[in-house]
Amino acid sequence: MKESTLNKIRSDFPALNQKINERPLIYFDNAATTLKPEAVTDSIVSYYNSINSNVHRGVHFLSQEATDAFENARISIQRFINAAHSREIIFTKGTTESINLVAYSFSKNFINEGDEIIISVMEHHANIVPWQMVCEEKGAKLKIIPMDETGNLIIKDFENLICKKTKIVSVSHISNVLGIINPVKKIIEISHKYNIPVMIDGAQGIVHKKIDVTELDCDFYCFSGHKVYGPMGVGVLYGKEKWLEKMPPYQTGGEMIKNVTFKKTTFNELPFKFEAGTPNVGGVIGLQAALNYLSATGLDIIYDYEEVLLKYATKKLSSIEGLKIYGTASNKSGVISFLLDGIHQYDAGTILDKLGIAVRTGSHCAQPLIDSLGIQGTIRASFAMYNTKDEIDKFAEAILTVQEMFG
Amino acid sequence: MSIEEIENQLVEEFGLFDDWMDKYNYIIEMGNSLPVIDEKYKTDKYLISGCQSKVWLLAEMKDGNVIFKADSDAIITKGIVNILIRVLSNQSPDNILNANLDFLDKIGLKEHLSPTRSNGLTSMIKQMKLYALVFKTKGN
Ligand SMILES: Cc1ncc(COP(=O)(O)O)c(C=O)c1O
Image (cartoon, rainbow over all chains, first blue to last red; front, side):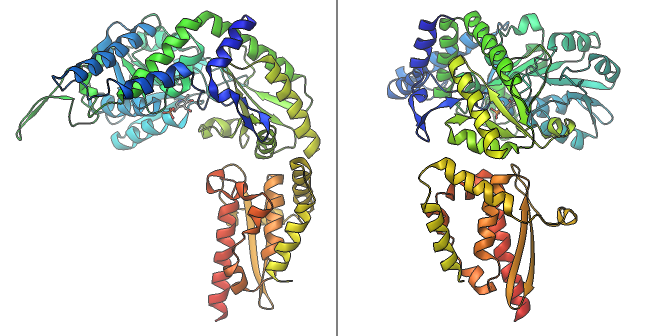
């Protein structure tokens, strides 16, 4: 990335201009949530200051404007991930709700006692617990794809797990703890040989990779707006029409109905069938602005630069004695998890914070993965397009300070 | 010494540092100087949950005062545990129950006591007061 582009990007994110503990903020907690460009906050303010109105219901001018803006955003998101139809784009409040929606609605019609659901060992709790609940309720079984010591999922083991009893496979695109990019295409291909649908948790995938759901051929893909430079409280569930059509509504109420009498209610069509109640219109418009910002900056430029940052940081951190990186496979993106010999991650995180560096410590909502690594947690640095090599240098220096203080 | 006297002593000690790093080095030192509790007590029975760092707490009654012993797997947490023990250990149940611990704000450590920090310290204070209450009730 050209320096001028980087400087332009940095100037678009006002939150970067603050000091934390009297030092310029170095924000390396992007996997938890990214900062927002002004284009996103502007779009939200502008929505509320002008066309704010409830959607799909009014005949009046503003309601029509708001509805158009909302439905345009849907089309723009459809194009961004290359879905076949805009009705395959369901707005939710985030990844968590998207997965809960599928777990609930899919299982209602397709999962019975003795059936099996496959996830992987490196899932976020959001892609574990909803399936666990389904298993409990239906008497189904949860099967886990293991990984090797570098963090790669073991596809051979997956092929052994999958069988006639398997009803759905749900795996993350990119691990939020290790940054490993999972071989989702392969997993989808194998599953489809058995006609088993696959859900991809794209919470981390959406921000680091070009997503083409048609090319991937996944049956469901979901993500949160706030991890891709958009606002909190809005997310997307992409689902193939053929599955969404066969699934019952998740929540019920206004918007999602066609006809209601006290005897019987008929439901609206896709996508509205899955969007009960007033949606987060401002959030959806903000999310559209975020994706537009990415496209305008240039996806390839961003992804290439993120790879440069990851390589640079990996090299820099690897050269520090007593530092161990978790997830050493080569197909990684955006995230480095590590531990310092003899230093508790909470201690390290506390001192890094004092030095103005925001990282996350702990189990990152992926306790089974952390347990399988035989550790209590990690320190995680996660990068975004506005981070710099200079920040990584400062980060490496800060780690040396931490080692000195606890040495 | 009374709880208040110890608190004042701590405020004075921490007043010597004008740099956060000196202050944290001191906390780390205190963490390292806390007598470790026997491994056999580091079980779930004595564990105070905190998902970022763990704290183990033991209490016993001696001559009308509560004696606390504690440990943590993180040094900064352990340093603050040590501070709390210095203040609250070897005090009467009533004094422990009445302690408001405002001094933590004065020495700039309040951020570590926020419940959302989940390092086990807030729960530790709660647990210390609970022990005091139990000993007080038993004593009566
Ligand atoms: C891989 C993964 N899945 C799911 C989630 C949950 O996302 P949200 O909290 O936005 O619903 C996260 C967020 O940390 C994540 O990283």
